[in-house]
Length: 462
Image (cartoon, rainbow, N blue to C red; front, side, top):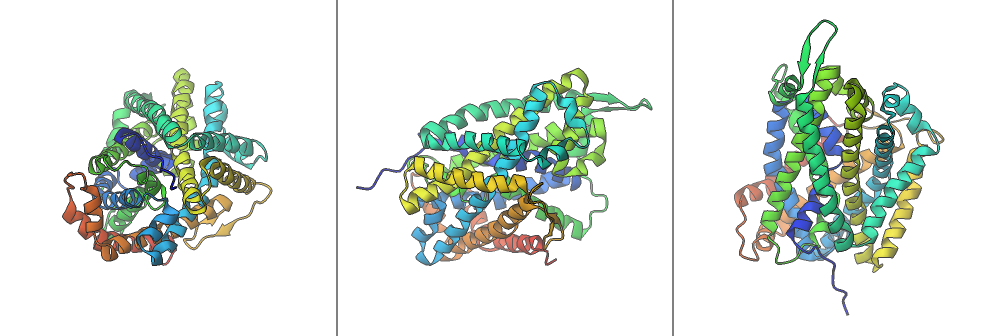
């Protein structure tokens, strides 16, 4: 007798879980950094347009594949077309590679949360603090394990009792913290030694007003590609996650409305991430400090918080608590993509699959941590950047495998199954799916072209 598949109890649980997956570390540090680098409002406008077109198309496609097949990413593609099961294999490898190093970064966030919570935020402002921490042999491993354990316990408890229930608790807290910190960020002010006063509103102008200085056709093209790349992080596309979550959506749920809500939720949070971070950095460190990229969260922001005075430790604690919640909701979704694949393909029960994958992630996570000390080396990636173990894993998953999965999905759904495959599933309860013409053009022509260009740029061919 076939075992009944677990499912969310309703649309709210699905939307919160999917939005929680989308709102992760990439949204919080990467979006503000790209917005500041790529002309502020210019990047925002391009991102929103792409989110409503490119992002909508791929998000709808993956969720539809999940609900239609009631299968995990590993088995869903083969269910649709046997010759395409290789796409499912790659789609499952992606979260398998991402989970270990994501948990390592989650451990870093936990470290900073504990530092600010215990009133030692000033220690984190030392230039050597971050480097000393990640190059130590034991503490990063312990914190990585704690973060992984939190994600594993949620997945171990199942779809309804674990994923859905935790999302209903964590997401409202996360959104409250984001809103609160965003509002606070607009109220701050700082007086420079020369008497110049800079306020949060000055910082928000840097964020919102489009800057076209030096933006030619070539630069505009790269801004578009940055926005396309960011959408992978923002919407959890091509990681198998949305297929796994889509497979748990009840047949009577309004799929179209749920997808629209996920789009809105994710775009609003990405926007608010910029409101939280950019004004604060501009006020206390200047616009140039935004160019620090990944180190923005762990090097620049602690200095910003302490520059705020006595309230700095409190704001720092709340900020890293918010980042930690975002990291957990994303981390558990990455784990679920692999666990659901093990359950469907190898007929494991959830508890065994969770323990099995968690142990693998722990072992690989230890190697990632030791990549900054015992196994330290530098490699030159095809795109010209120097890399450690974490960077290599990130490059393979995000720059190589994810675009391949997304391109193959566009070809399968756009040309073999045809867009009607998506339309019939989205409208099977009598709902009306908007943007049909847009979807058809995007899935067949525009999205594959954008993805191929992104892949070419990622591998350093241009």
